[in-house]
Image (cartoon, rainbow, N blue to C red; front, side, top):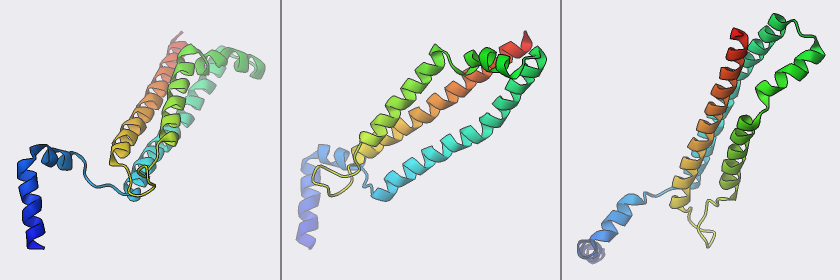
Length: 149
């Protein structure tokens, strides 16, 4: 065993790039993948819980301020929740979700998880959450502008 450790040490000293590769690719497990997905899912749920009731209340305020009937409200408020920018946020989110669902957790042989995929998954999940935050901010900006008019 000692001979094996000495050989590994000699190889690492002889190949400095191997040390860098080992340092850049920490081991990962299925649990790490699940944790990233759970964290992002929780952040998205929290965004919905925080923003949906407030946004709906602001929509009701606008309806009352403009004295819209229910039919008028549905017609007049639609641009506040559907426009090209919001559709762009939705397309971007769908692209992130497609990347997330198409990425595998295991290596090509179905064995150990691919840690490079985990890094990409973290980045994609973070981008998805940021996209949804930006979408909410945009929609709140639109409704606040309407309420000020």
